[in-house]
Image 1 (cartoon, rainbow, N blue to C red):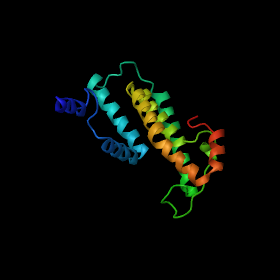
Image 2 (image 1 turned 90 degrees about the vertical axis):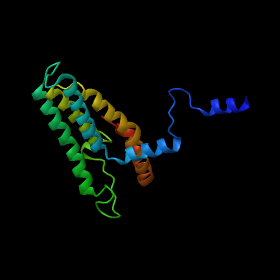
Image 3 (image 1 turned 30 degrees about the vertical axis):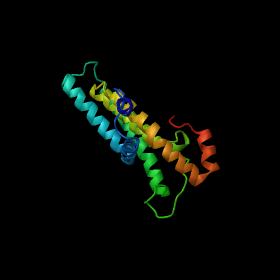
Image 4 (image 1 turned 45 degrees about the horizontal axis):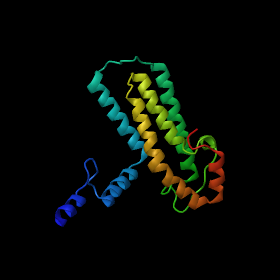
Length: 177
């Protein structure tokens, strides 16, 4: 009788993951190790593929090519501007050994994470231009992923590296817009 109770207690409840906590943490860590732009491309491809499977080339709710192209261009320009500022300042580890500068001007004066914001806007623009409504949930998934996985790690590293300077900046500049 005691053995049956022990076996029942050891068996996971229905719907409960059988993945050990350590393993699920490792998988999550590996997912975070993938750069956010790669996730944006992957989620875009998944949304486009799912749209093609569901509706083919049809745009069930119409297309807005001009507005979509404008959103794509604006998003990519915003993200590109932010990336160039980081490269020039050698603020990205590996670009200039030992030299790290805090960038708080340009698009960083309006958003603490302008590259992520630009990618999300470009994803939404792709949905508008091509008439792919599944790009909205793909962009939402991208934002949720960087909001919960990438940004906390980056902001913790910035707080460690720049202390009160980053804390003051974070108090003045919103995370997204």
